[in-house]
Length: 54
Image 1 (tube, rainbow, N blue to C red):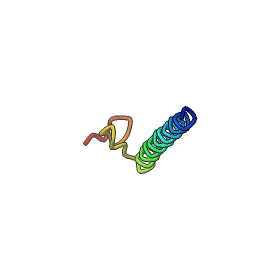
Image 2: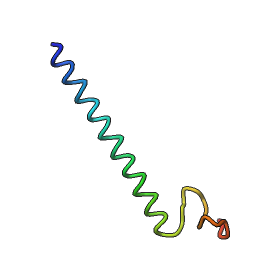
Image 3: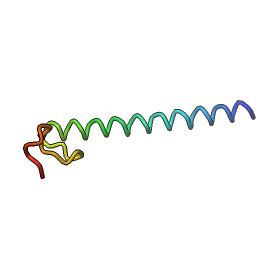
Image 4: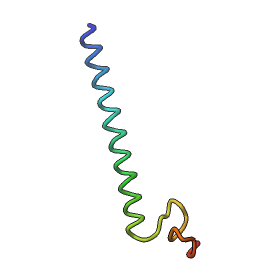
C-alpha cells in the first residue's frame, strides 16, 4: 500500500514537473519569436529603445 502511494506521488510529481517544463519552454519560444519578429508584444513596445511606441 505504501509502495503504491509512493509510486503515485512520484508519478504526479513527474507529471507536474513535465508540465512546468513544457510551459516554460512554450513561454521562452513565444518570447524568442516575438523578439525575432522585432516586436515584443508582451511589453507593448516595438523595440527596446522606446522610439516606436504603439
